[in-house]
Length: 461
Ligand code: ARG
Image 1: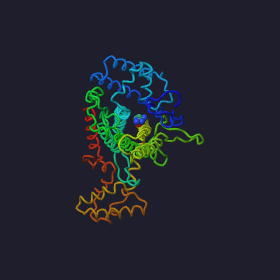
Image 2: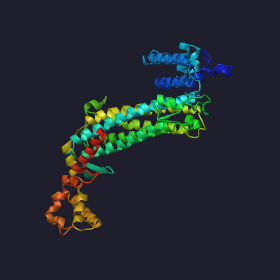
Image 3: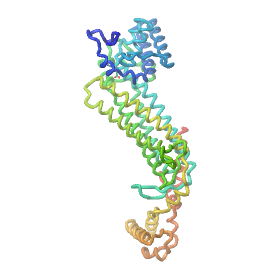
Image 4: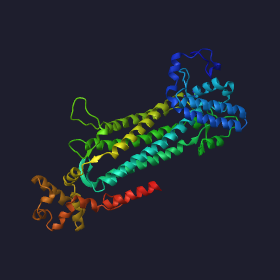
């Protein structure tokens, strides 16, 4: 042991190896929990006093000592001694240094096992709120751009091949929907985070006459844990959060992938503003979509965090095992990464400039309205399979002659369907194709505007 005696040092006769101290310490990363650790300790202390487990004077001393420490930490004036195991020990030791032995009473009826669970839950419930706000900002950016681009046509793709024309606004709102599911997942996860574990102590609960409901009330928890063994073992909420973060990252990554492709020379559908791109150190002409690429790349990193927590948890015996200390770095990394990506993507999205004429021109090509022509034949009484065949042959004929379908004269069309009328040309038009899909969830302007209205009324309500 380097220098001082450990708080748990009673049964030890030999000091801890310096390397073991370094190896086991989590202080360098769990110090970010300090605010929550102190908040939890203050509530615990108030409860101890209210229950007569410690005296009101003792509680007062402890609480003002903790508030002192908090102030020091907020100002960056706290010196974290490297031989302390974790944030709980750092705070407890400093408390005893400041107020004397009475500081040692704070840990009555508590273990670091239920304490760390509490800290993690307090921390994560705050961060979930922050992340929900950031997701809402990204959704707002998408809706704003959708409104601005309500008349812009985009070729829609399947298999990365031109499929059917859609409204750009419809495309943008597809991301809104994905983010909406992310929000609901995160909110639900928030409910499972929001459970107060103190009172579970090391694993068996405490014999002191604590009042868990009072602690929950002080810390604004709607629920307390129902089993002390589960409470100190459980990190489901961490794994669940990182899973939710992974899906959210996956959605951002897919959007970014489209932006990378569309902003390239071959597509030229969108210009990512200079503020969100970077240049090449060798090729002067380059403007690279690095932000979008990094969001795509960081998605892999958050998946890694998910694999890490799942693997740490796998096969852990009941109850608390020190392995659980390895929950923090993946969690912190996932939180930091997802927040950084959301913030930068919101701003980048708001600044996108779409090349409307280029997209329209592209949407009109590639026989993107072939399905509309088939649908038109169906309306004339032809079974869909047969209509599909007729239009397929028509497309083949056009490809052979390097002609657009609209450029065929009616006699040519009649080679494939003898009853063809001039009104067949109307359904080859992209605007008509888009406008026809006026059903809930469809891409017609009216349908998209209805969805925007629903979204906006929900946001206010
Ligand atoms: N630093 C520990 C963790 O993060 C706190 C709990 C330690 N408990 C123990 N019995 N060693 O999980």
